[in-house]
Image 1: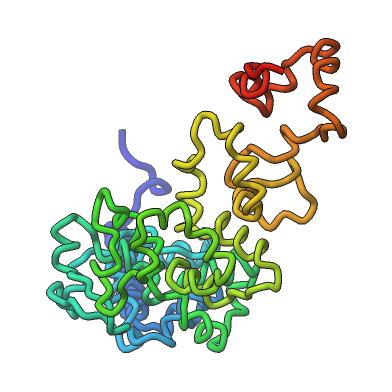
Image 2: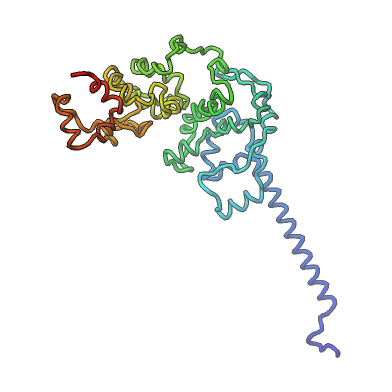
Length: 363
């Protein structure tokens, strides 16, 4: 069947259409290539991050640290141009902005030596090579070295909008926010996984002579009530909390705050003391009369006191047992009470053997 004049396409027209398609294809490739080249170069420039309002916290903290001599891409090699363009133009990113990719040790080792031992504070000895042999990555300890934990400290805790972060805020945060918290060190240096003695890492810090006493572990509380601030100087590992520490006029409040919130103290105080034997319900009155404040470091008087400094380290509180005050002449009157109500309530405080202390005697 022969084509009609209306359906036949001239050969010259076909060639023209093909050339137009080829031109458009080449033009698209050139435009896309140019765009990728532009963004690949643009993304290496810190101004690319600075121009994005949601990146202000990260850029401002970078600007006030020694790492500001290096472009962002020097460390963040895993930033994808395609991802950058996609998220920038679609707005598909989470706030606060975080680096989702792991920063390899080799990036740090391009400038830093793993043989480094001495650290800026002067008295610290940290064998970086040994830590690397143990499988500890640089980022495990130094994750805040550039950006000073700005997301948690300013964006989350203080509610500062990303675009509102200033250089002044960053400088203030960098005075403590980019330090390694000693809490992180103590996760390994707990005496089981790694040594916990001060001299392991500190060259000019030895435990005070009082700490070497045989019963220091159970007797240190009295000295804490006399000068908890001195204890805090060594045993508060959170730099920000140490900087903001403010001693009150009430020694009990000061001790409760440290015993219940300071990680070093709390980790011991949540465990049952060795002095609290099985019959401690019988033995504790005499000790409580001599030093009741020591009890209140961990225990509350009431179940839910209105002005508690922090939650107690134990669920046992004084009024759990001491909800009834014995009447005068109780020794003579208590048999009638026991006969009428039974002895169940007595054993909430007294051990069964305590009755024999009197009832075995001839009267």
